Amino acid sequence: QVRLVESGGGLVQAGGSLRLSCVASGSIFSINAMGWYRQTPGKQRELVATITSSGSTNYADSVKGRFTISRDNAKNTVYLQMNSLKSEDTAVYYCNAGVRLITGWDHDYWGQGTQVTVSS
Picture 1: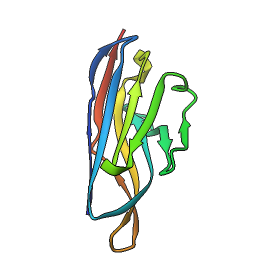
Picture 2: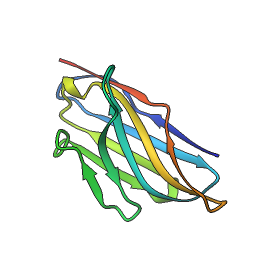
Picture 3: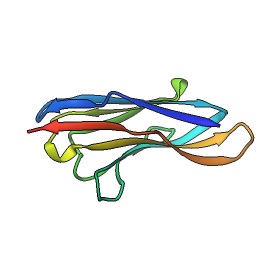
Picture 4: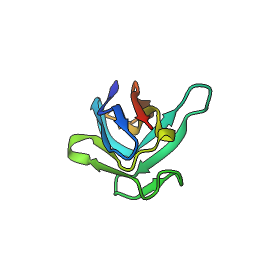
């Protein structure tokens, strides 16, 4: 099995910064794309940013220029640097990873989520 553990969420004032981290552990052969998603009450989970194993990135329009996704393949870790935070960035942020297990099977995994609250 594989476990994703997020950290780095918290309360920050508008205009501030936070850095989220997500570490994957378990029966991992390799990790393909990793990403961050977010969800607020009553709304669907939405994509924030993704990054492939080779480093290609994709961002939601709402975070372009403010957020940066990166990863450390040796540590099975993905990061999300969030700058110039706005109140509308308040959400639970979830880490996602497309994992090839040591058994050869591919499976999608989610973390438990970390709360980010931006006060205006």
